Image (cartoon, rainbow, N blue to C red):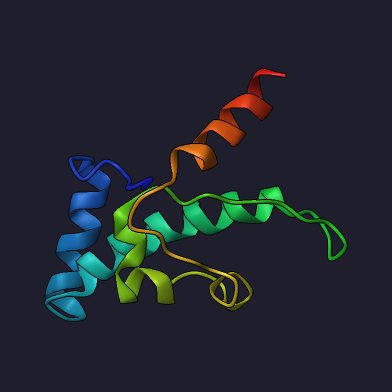
Length: 100
């Protein structure tokens, strides 16, 4: 997942400010939102218009977390499926397509 650099001085200060002036978890919420903004932008680049289509693979177990799923757009959540493990044939299909 594309989390921003947690050691960035600007991000640290922003999170500290939010935790102090908004709520004790506002900084972490901001951090999660920055990550999910990047994910949603990436998904949006794959589908450019309403008649376009794409397959988007989110290969990280953290996408199974309810609050992470809730951060995805509704049109993605409706077709989102979760698999505990991938069948070797599934991965072979994508590798074979990429090498052609």
